[in-house]
Image 1 (cartoon, helix red, strand yellow):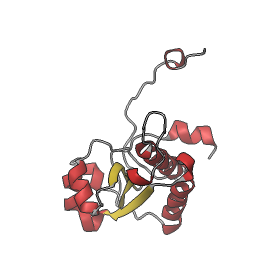
Image 2: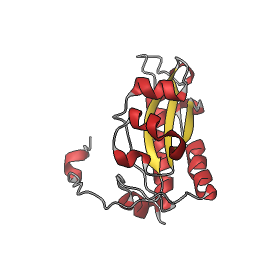
Image 3: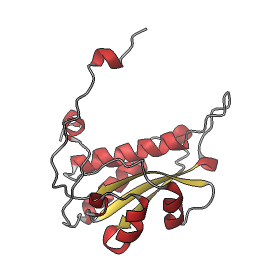
Length: 168
């Protein structure tokens, strides 16, 4: 698929089949995560691959939508704030930005491979951290189901470019 086809085709999938994701496709998605750029290339992230069939109850506690646990996998990108680059002039730590870039690579790669995903940021972080057994310096940043979708996209109109871009 061409790049602009991927970004035009991608949408937040809110329904999945239980069809298994081929290992080759999962591996490609994870390789896309590994190749994602991070601040100063510190790579302060981990990707957790969670099998839903063995963890439905725990995952449902993290995020309650029924479709969240329909796909064979749920992925979580977690970030280590202590290992991320921090801007020295204002102290801005970019661990969450790095993790978001990683998730974007995951989601675009999945789309290219015919898989569905949905960015999930509205999860219960304390429950997720406990489930993933994260140390104090680690934070779960984003989740996504990963699988074959069976839901149509919702209407998500975009603002015109003139409202979003400023030339100086």
